Length: 264
Image 1 (cartoon, helix red, strand yellow):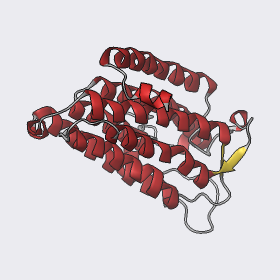
Image 2: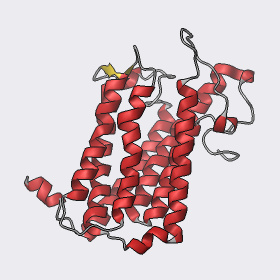
Image 3: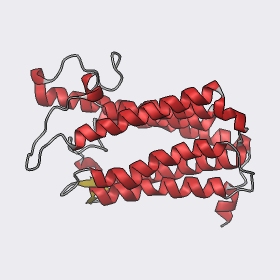
Image 4: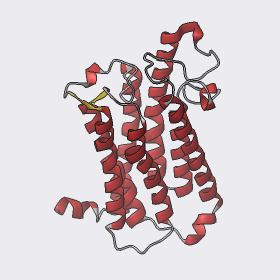
């Protein structure tokens, strides 16, 4: 309890110092993914190097690694005595995203017979716990918004980007989930939606979401979280794009970029 009490009494100076150091780790994460060429969130590549702690059923592992962020962000947001304010809408957007990722998405994917490395599950769970605290505590104790913020142009622009990114993310997931017909095996080239432009539109959508979150909250933790999501996902998307090119060769659409249409 003493540790929890410390977390609940962190002042803004110490909070900002920690979150800046924390944000710098996103660069290290992206560099590691780039040079190892591992695809920890995908079953397309050989991730045996990550299996030193064994493997777990993919659906079960996904739920275990994602649910903590919901519990932690809600706990630390609600644990302070701060009066209710418009920050509840911002945290609500965060929770909305992770309800889909933790409670809906795992039951939509075709995970039968698939596993994920336990090490990846634990490292992702740690990532989510830390970020759940940083988001929940900041918007619950350190930052409040007047109701007028909800029609500020920054909030409206950010919310629009957040919802647009969510749409791209979910529709791209739908295409991947329904890529193979019942009984089919092997890999196929996805088509439709933003797959017209990039190999990993689900990653692109998530990057857009969190850029929108950073703008709608106009905050340091919002920006840091967007960076933490964007850099590793872009690195992983580039690795996945190379995999597609090596796997399908000349059959793969030459005009597709990796993650960002027309650019990268």
